[in-house]
Structures are given as C-alpha cells and as structure tokens.
Image 1 (tube, rainbow, N blue to C red):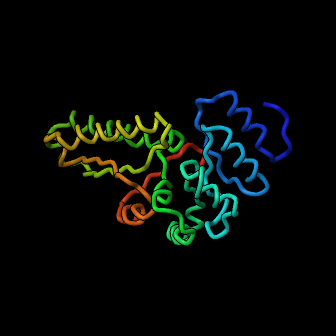
Image 2: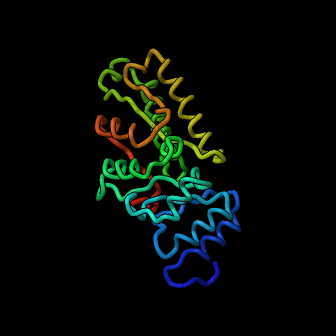
Length: 216
C-alpha cells in the first residue's frame, strides 16, 4: 500500500487493481468527492464495478447517470441503505431516471462477497441430511422451498459457475422422489427489484449473508 490522504481510498484501490487484475472489485458508497476519480478508474480497469449506495436515485450526480446510460451500463450495480430506505421508494426513483429496460434489469449481481454460494451449500447439506434420514424422521422435518436470484456480470466467470451449480443442484433435488416433498430449490431467472418486491414479502425467511462489512 502506498500513502494516501486521510479518508481518500482512490490510490489504495488503484494499487489493488493494478496488482490483482483478476480480482473483481465492487466499490461501494462512492460519493463526493471521489465520484469523478472512481468513474475514471472504472474506465481504466475492467475488473472494477461501482454500486449506487451513496445516493438516492433522485440525487444521482449527472456524471453517474450519463455513465449508467452509456459505457457504464454493465459496470454499475444496485446498492441501497436498506432497511433505512425501502426498496420500493428507490425503485420508483430509478424508474424516473428513464433508463432503458435492459439497463434497469442489471441491478442485482451474483458475487462472491454476497455469498450466494453459502446458500446453495446449505441446500446441499440439507438434502444430504434428508437422504440419510428415515422416512419417519423426514416427516418430522420442516419443509422448505429455497429460491435464489441474481445475475452474473458478463466477464465474471465465478459468478456464472455459481449459477450453474445452483441450477444443477436444483435439478437433482427436485427430481429425487425421496426428498422432493420436503425440499425444493430453484434459481429465479431475470431477477430484479420488481421480482424482489414480489418474492421477498412472500417469503418466511429472506437471507442476505454478504461478507461482513461489505454491505450496509
């Protein structure tokens, strides 16, 4: 690490991006006075993504909106300060930006730091427990339907592998006559805020298990 001004992360981040070109970095809460520098870095390093958690959509700086409409359409990720600010309010403000539909749909990513992988590992563990259990013991188990949603960035190979794993696990579990009455799994295609507004309120449990310190 090289010296940096107090509270100014740009030099540190640039050094990390230079030293680890295969590392996908998501920069969160990138507000003033760092936005212009961060947009420059995002143009320079293809492994850098920016989230929107620093602003409400109604207060997005002009430079950020133009970046989202142009070359940064696939480089800006949805981020929020939920539960302080509800997703419904943010969704309405995003709609008011008049972004094209294909850009609006790119707001939820599969990412290693979000740890969707841990969700599917739990599903595998649960499935193996049910397979080992006797028919009588299975009847005492809580029935579960697990839904996992998200999208992979175009060049993010690990995220695509996670999605493939989720789908393959779901195929095995859902087709097993011994356990399918007690456990089902599905990957939600085309996941977005609109889908989340329907699925999350209807769920008994909504799990967000991101790496500590990476999301508000």
